Image (cartoon, rainbow, N blue to C red; front, side, top):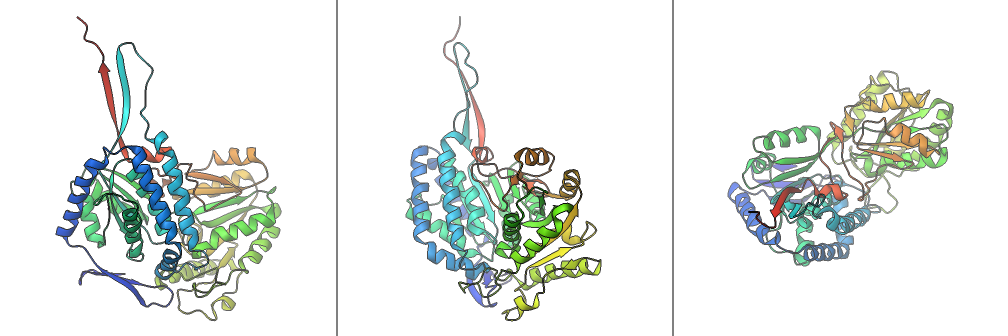
Length: 469
């Protein structure tokens, strides 16, 4: 949380509720100074050869890897992910940064139309200027790297604001890029209140805003940006579905979907929040996924045996409890007894995994984002019914299809209203593919060569080589 009245940002650890870190919030003059420095630094950076920018990125990757242990511990303390899993975030940071570094020459290459005699025509991708990145707490490095690295490679300067729950992450970004030799002013960490964040979006000098967070936060960012003619990239909520077809390998599918639902305590925008299973295999699949859920170990995330840590705050856990209680009151059945999981819980935000059956779309747990360790399972009678159920959502980030038939997956996937379609995997970002959403999951694109398009503007050059008489 932050105490805006006192001008201090405070991060309380989900582990035990103790104050973990605090930082002063920037005042208006300091924000303007940072913006001015960014604009001045960007002018020279834009003239730097792409190969030199790539070298800086690679050096920053190496610097981040050298801090892996310290950064992992900080992630665990700030947002509660088990320490056994936190290093994976740095591995993901490395994978995405290296991929975007390798894709930069193709993503930033000139677009050359068909040749015409006497003319030199091409479209150059030029940097926007200053990119303001607002990153969330649940995957603080993985979400931020999607925009930070390609923005810098494209020749932009970056102002980076992380959630008040993970303030050290933006500071670590600056640290590793400083070690890599990035010129001063090009990447700055800003600790801002909500009101100061929106004020910066409105300020002349910010050329693009990349926001990852809630739908409500996205509306606020878009509203502020609409006062100026600047672009936004919005990665918002999800209620991501999975469909288990009758030809799926049920044992392996159950394990993967349990992980997709409960990893990071379910606090993932692309985690599995609802499952549709063909009725002919429903009983067998449900038994397998319950068995997989029961292997979870809820506890102190610093314990190496813990696989399920606390939710970020008690109010978030209570929201999920409310969804479960409302669903069971309406006729759903819960298949997991929470008592054995929660008997030694340190605080109320330690929440057991839960699987609900006999659910339907009149229940909020099947329609509204839970962002916690709960998943509802519905039986369906056909692929067509699965498609209908999967599309019955205001969200559209990812969807996964579990089948042994790739043609089946393709036919189903082409009918889904979603940004990414998986077959036999879930809860993953492939940096070689565009990451995007539809409906209330947001707008814009990160990753792949397409991710460079939103961070540059096309500038057309039309040169006639000789004047005619």
